[in-house]
Image (cartoon, rainbow, N blue to C red):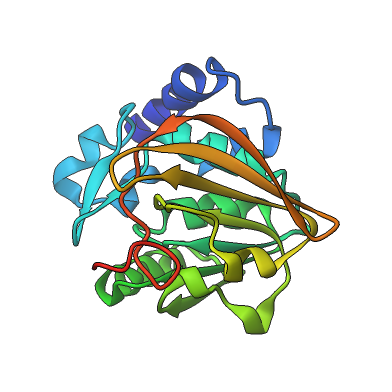
Length: 214
């Protein structure tokens, strides 16, 4: 009950008050137990307005960032989405609450193993996992209604964009390895329509079409 209350306050104060209105996103954020995707030692901080470390030099994003990135994809129950950077699995769970199918790629095997175990324990059956270079996407299952990149990239990875459906949306932080601009990329007539949103800070996107140094 304590965590349910914290989750409700998180959604009210950090998400709804900042302008997130998509009811599907709000309900997903109310439902998914964010603390379970973290080490028990930091459970008391799980619903705070900040990112938290998850090991391997990676982080779980601030709750508002998870909500707003999800909202900007404009997904529904029929959507098929590709997530680049499984991380803790929390964002994956939020997507799985909204979408018909989530495909998620993580380059760090230890993180993928923990996230997969947790998501399976929570009963998700609409998620497929892959370990590898996320910047190359998952071409065999393309195209996707939405692509969510949870790491900062110097540019829009071309292979990922090619796997986006016509009319689909990609949400990606674009900038240098220290700070980025959250950007919505729409595919219209096969071309990129980029909409910069606001400043953000993510760990670097490592891979052939991201930052090459691991």
